[in-house]
Image 1 (cartoon, rainbow, N blue to C red):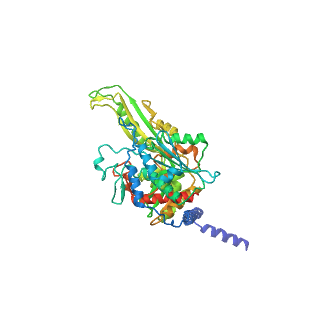
Image 2: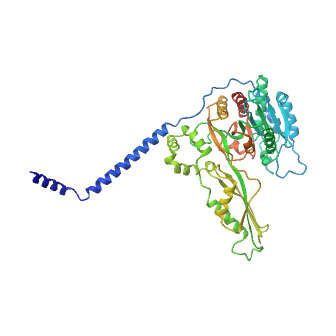
Image 3: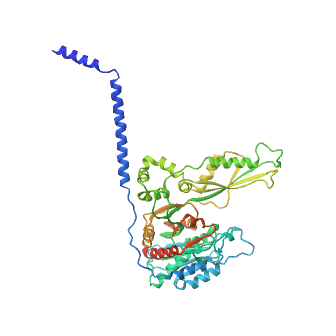
Length: 512
């Protein structure tokens, strides 16, 4: 009996295919892969579903009694003063800063009667609104009085003359309308209204209006900061210019977005210099000085800094994710899996690319002054906007490594600045900004999102005296309006200027 069973067993085994073991292993592997994929999909879907907006709740603000026409006219008058910053001022130019400040004192009498005033660094203004509670850290509002020049030869291209402060077609026109006299006047309008309403802040409010922001703030902001340091004053928060409310400008988000800068990139300009023997262009060497420098620039353009999605940029995309289409939301909710694909997509856009990498921009090139003369010296100028996590020193070192040519001398041109720290989006002041934006919304409430500012502002000078620095103007812009910033036909919509006044009014109440 036992012998027959053994034979039956052997006979059954002999009927199995020779590769049955391999097939079983392959089947198990396939099932494992399918199981892993299913698990990843389930995890990705759950993480996507769990993305929620962290926005605060805010009711519409009560009606604020503003004489809007008079407020518009006060901004228009401020625009009429030529407070231009020049790197190389025309002979005899001093700027109309004292005249504009005298006008502001007359236009906002309660402000200058109640707040103390100092003039610092030549023409910068520092105002102090004493609070009731000395134990509360003060806050600081910034804006700047100066403007960039009008591009020479373009005056006739403006719809209205750049320094006439014309109010027409629903806009207030002129150089400084958006950058940054609207902030100055909106702050002063708000404080004047609050004083009229009998409001006294709980914490002390400082207001600083620099006069040379457009040429790096070396006399204005730096001297104001030195004053604060000497007096031992440190701020809970600082608010300066920076982001705006955008509509239709953030890809895949079909509602307004209020971009609040929580950090700004660093700034570095390098000169690349090569020297060679001069001579006639009919007998050139294999490489002229221009050729050597050009090759160095090409190397830099061919080797961009690596893209990184972290810090302020990451916070921005994660905040916007709930307002994006499902596929985008899933990708941003699962960066542990999708980060390379997300970065590849982001860097396709010129604007978004600047948020995730240190940018390289060759801006100037000089060689010989005559077409048939070999240059003795050629110089290229390259500007870098530095991503937080890198420094001017680390960028310079990498540039030297990429160029790798002893014939090219790399030097820092002008003043460099490292990126700012990233400010806290859970801090009470940030939440007050968010609440105030929503309270003064007149149409669809915007998504309030943190943002990495790719330009430079006076606020970078205040890092030593501030816990958190934010950069935002409560004004809705379009690409056309944005093009007027430092360009032709700078203007601000009258309705948006009034929104900015109401924003500062609400903010000063909300932080107290």
